[in-house]
Image 1 (cartoon, rainbow, N blue to C red):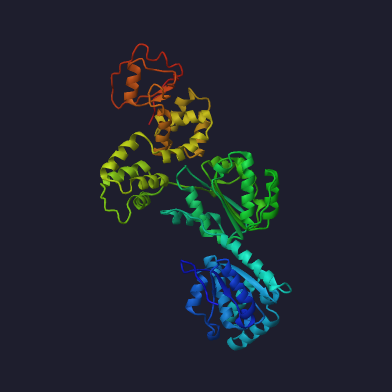
Image 2 (image 1 turned 180 degrees about the horizontal axis):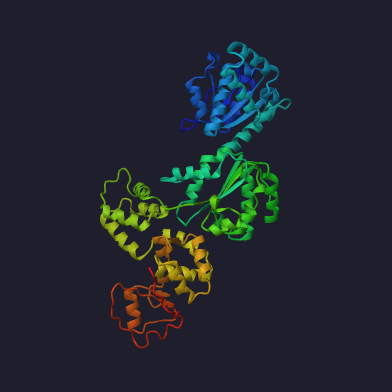
Length: 564
């Protein structure tokens, strides 16, 4: 019987045991069953050389394993080596999130915890040798107590084959709880994860819901995955429900999401959900005593939250529910307070440069690109991770001439892959809010909120609520009394207006050349709703006699002077 490793040199399972009790029967059968399932298992083969200190190699094997199975047998506690293993295993449980599963082999859990019978005799013997109050013995007692309190498997009267079958199934299910793929280059993620862990207050037994809020492409899902990977082993069960918006466009689509949540949390138990209401009752009934980590990614409708995580009481003590969304109002309606909402922000300049370089310049890349071109891309992306990744990958390996051509194209036409992601937020708006957004994108970015409200109130009856909705959907921000928006979101709005390709067919005109063409040649059409021309110097513009005749949809309003 020899230990086996996976390709990374690590183990799936570390087996801790007392050889004289189990090596030639139960252990050998368990090891063989695990191997048949492709589970890489560490078994110590140097038992006869054991002293009181475990070797560095054994310590590393424990650290490199994902699961430790402790087989508590009658004579286990008589071995100082075994007790040192338990201490190390429990340390790794706390410090490295090692999953620990005890097997109580022909003994009862309370014999390990208290200790009693053979465990009590062994500890008395150790106290005589090392001293009743020795630090070593106290460590052993604490480790036995903590491990004895964990849930695992009891073996008394059943057939060994049945126990081994149950164990292999349970271990296999635990191994399915694997970390998620975060990103090819997770730049700037770690410090944000640290901040989120502080917000989560993982030591508290309260059930806590937090929100990750931000515009499309800013990295909410990436950050949620990294956070999930960092903490999921601290929970009894975990589930990451990705793309909730995409997978539940219809109410009936919530049922498969409920089934997936239950299956992942209950480690493979297949429960049939007949309706959303039935799924709600199942979630409440089955998860109310479990400490779970649940991530609901890209939520955009309260129905989704009501079906999957409406109440904190649905989940056991210490549970954490993390919701990523573009809509901060959705979080507020769900009862998540502002101090539990994490606003995901764009990358710092240094982080943006690092992320872009990792995608645009491979190690073996011999092409030299002007720094001005790199700076132009960084300015265009303005710290948005999606844009940095898409543009970096697109420009990778291309010549300077191709870079220059690509930048010229981007100045006129937004990248489709980026634009499609950003436009999701626009598509989810009501019509009145869409109109206000397009007005701001085309005319009012950087203007004072007071000035914009005065202008738009003359043609919109709901400017105040419309602006607030745009803030909640991460489409605009209000900074020092001025309305701002990310450059790429502004370009997305302008692209929506210019999409017909003919200035006469666009709903808004703001470019000097387009305005001159339309007004000087009687080219106005019913599609045009607004024209704003803000020139730094006085210019003479010829307006044809009938230029405005066909613009029946245009909004005429007084133009208040902006006070700085």
